[in-house]
Image (tube, rainbow, N blue to C red; front, side, top):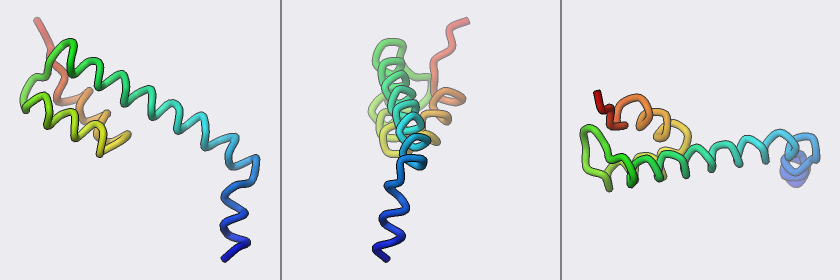
Length: 72
């Protein structure tokens, strides 16, 4: 078990994981800003906020596809 935990914290693994986590955090922040500045298309603003924050990457993608307000 200790060997498996030490495998997670190898520099090679962290070199891949940290940029992915930063990219995911930036996407969440981008979606939260869009929710409050531009509004949402179909659900309450606070519900979309919960979907984006709790759903992480999947929630952000769902918001960008279905929840973003599109002014035509």
